[in-house]
Amino acid sequence: QSTAPQENNDTTVVVEKVTFVAPMTAGSIIKEWSADVPVFSMTMEDYRLHLGIDVAASAGTPVYAVADGTVESVEFHPMMGQTVVITHADGYRSVYQNMQTAVPDGIEAGAAVKAGDKIGSVGDTALIEISEDPHLHFELYKDGICENPLTHFTVSPIDEAKDYEDN
Image (tube, one colour):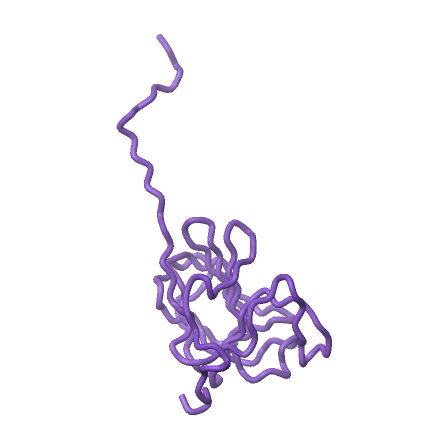
């Protein structure tokens, strides 16, 4: 009698593809993703890499999950302020920072979220970006490697943005 696994040619492998939505419906990019070329930080008064995008909007503007996933953590980061991290299928992980400290009921570690679920609001809690207007600092990782979020969804760029204070 053999204990070796048997091959089954009828096996179907399903690869789950992640569909992304923008983390906000209002706002404009005030700082783009830059993993290779340092950009100026008004708060720190120096040049540094910027591994996310900053989307400016009035404080309190809703922030949404960019894809279906599971909340990994909700915590107050000493430099980046209120932070929500969500894991998604296919090795993706989204990080939302500089939000208001209050989060919606049910947004806690282990909670399942759908793309477009409200997970918080724009704030100004990041000490390292405090000289900037209120904004969401958003990062996206694939298998632990930071990616430009704008390759997955669209947000108004600076030069096309309307005055976000009017939204």
